[in-house]
Length: 79
Image (cartoon, rainbow, N blue to C red; front, side):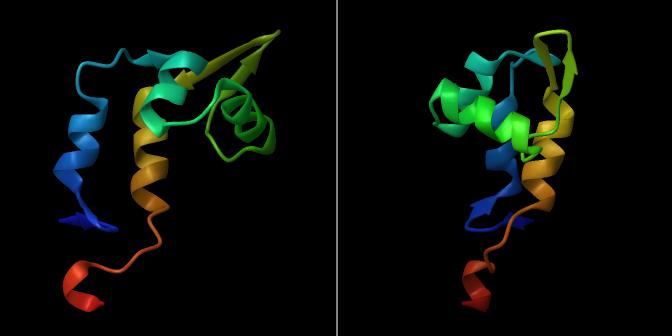
């Protein structure tokens, strides 16, 4: 199965070995973003997460499913 231009197994590999609860640093590494950019997306609701006090709780599987569901590119054979 394809996710945009990436095979879904690529998405699985991207999250392989990651803990169930991700830090902002983890997410910035996964998405190739800066930490301030991740915080901005957290506040805007782009990245699924829960704010407990001043701490963000980001669940690996929720982020992975959001990325899977949010793919907006056609498969290479549909282009």
